[in-house]
Length: 384
Image 1 (cartoon, rainbow, N blue to C red):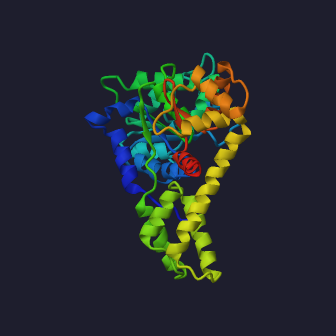
Image 2: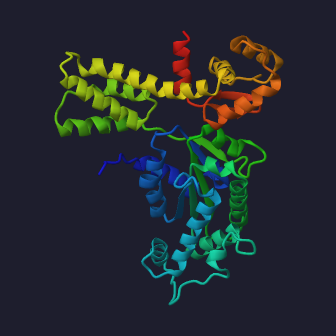
Image 3: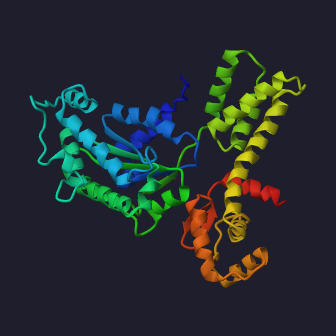
């Protein structure tokens, strides 16, 4: 079994901000969205740290991963998770929700609580709405209900998913403003597509416009120290110093899998008798792996064609947000790169493809940036 690096302090802080917000955190009850690059440990943190901490603080938690089955509609996955929770309300005392109710001195009674609707009709035409169902959960649990949707950006890829977000907003607005509400409905969305996650709170046509959007807190020096300590206990092989290992972890974009891969290569190289010290080898290995990861992303741009490369380069060379991507001046610049005339109407579909592949991200109206700062950094290095 793989040992998981726990982050209890971060989980306790985030749970406290959600469940017991101070004046400056009251806006989190409108929704909280965390975005971060792939493979930086978001899902692991949610499942091993945040969910247990929320439950320990008395919240009822519903977790849904929209990437668990990409063939199934996001709405279907969320409704199924809510139905399972509602079923827990009426089943014997072995369920987590039943145990929570007993701890609060609430008696389920012989048959448990009966809803005024059929569970199988939840979300169906003529059946109960999410607002009705979640209101029942809050009232019966007499506490907060937290819905965590992982890879939440999938919800806006279909009209059904968009309607789901509107239904969740309706549930929030039906529950939270009540003067005597026994609890609140809290929505936490996380995603690896920073452009789309950002749009969920920035665009006026989205259900959670104005909600809080924050970057996912990546793993830090404490994680690097933890890994080095475990390696030292395993076989006593030569290890890099903590400062060199930390620098390598940052070089690799705070991605734990890439860091462990670099350390594995370091161990193999050390045994091959190259005569170099770990502090000499690890920076070289990390730089190589870093370049390889960026190459995979840049290859995606190349596969989209010359115009995509020209647009990407215009964005990547800017220090801040790039603007004017659709202007006549930009079209002339693209034409000089691709060697043919570029019409202004050609640009938008290509930008949309770059956004869809998580290569660019929309930073505001008419403002764009490279989705992965690591890729932008390497692109600039290679362009001198």
